[in-house]
Length: 262
Image (cartoon, rainbow, N blue to C red):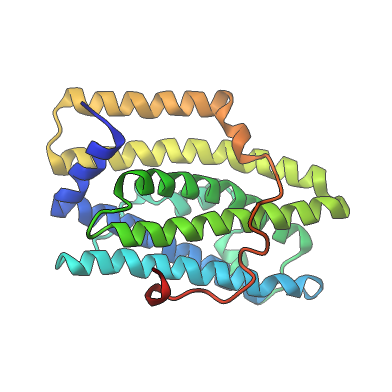
């Protein structure tokens, strides 16, 4: 019987599929670290109080990339090149979502609207990340190899999502509510399309590595398309709502190194 746990266990047990999974995850996290690092350096003068939080966000993403690379090293594996069609962060940028890399590569301060776009983009993508990590946490929190990493990253992703909610609500109170909702909707609709396409691509690569029969691959693809249909109809709404998080000032301190997690 197919389930999220059995599917991921199959990927985890095979060196080639595990290598691809960790390489994709590490690449995405490292890219997020670079983006947040550049944004923190370019925060406009009137919003400099945000810079340490953006930097903390970036430091967490960099840490996650190191964690996935460490998981590979523990198995005696080297990272593999990430296939273009599985690169979630790159494909989102190609859709015009978030701040373009050529913009972040310049030494020109960002605008207030740029910061709102960054936070809205992060609110949408961190929703996805938090949900994915909670799913892994549900099934693998006590796994002897993966469990500690899952607990570390899941905690961070929840903090990132709380931070995005809190900061966007602050901008909404300052009169940017309509802009925020418009950007959130645009990001959410683009993200669900990219997530569908990346999910199909990842499953296709995994299927070849694990030699899945056509019937199994077809069932998984149908599930991905069904999830997209649901998200396109109503599921996207969870990505655009804003509410005050229980945990306030979630990124108000320095990044916690891997060694300091329980």
